[in-house]
Length: 303
Image: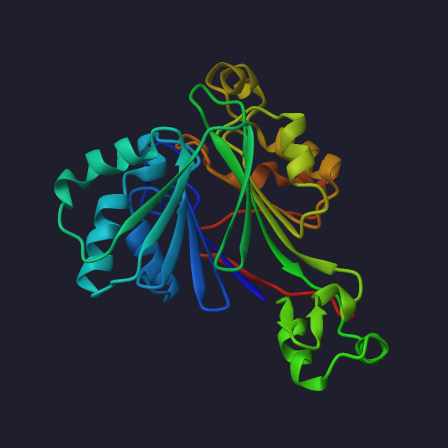
């Protein structure tokens, strides 16, 4: 099961009812955060979650509304006596940007490890998370992220017996580990069936629509996508500043055949956003207007 919380839904500047952009997930005791705009600490506290077990922080890009909350979060982690390393993933320049922000958070009791993205698409695996980063179309280098939790095939007693594998090795093989013994080498594929459908979440902000996004989000259980503007007269502004409208996000969701769309990263000028959802639903019916603290538990399918 993957716990997902949309901590903040605002773009550019925080508002009394809308924190800046951030997403947090929890899986198997490990937490991951994407972006941490101003106010993220408060949003985490309001949700009742903890900073200490955040193991991975991913950044879409380095505009202030996506990273300005970082120094405070690092200090809070340090004050919580965290000692485990923290891994950060982001576009090229990540270490330079973070170390500059750390001028006001210089002493931390834990190591920061950096993974800088240099390719248009790049995949890393950390703490059970399969993280696929893909470059999008903003006015600075920016990435979206697909987070997947793979699910291995069913264990087959018949296959284990056919291969003559002693029972004492079954549990190890079931966890995906190869066993080398005097009796022979036993591999997980000897006892596991075809890989089953896992959990897939795609998160994307600050971009124009692209085929890369649709491909990355294909068949996702949840697609969280920016809807910077909803007013029809803002389409030219969206094009100029490399953002998306509600309707472009809905079209991407339909093209990618996702299960559900959450809109996020709203312009500060966007009021009464719910008034625009009828047209969004005509394009993609299973769309929701994102709200700070909106949460869901994504679980594996039966079978």
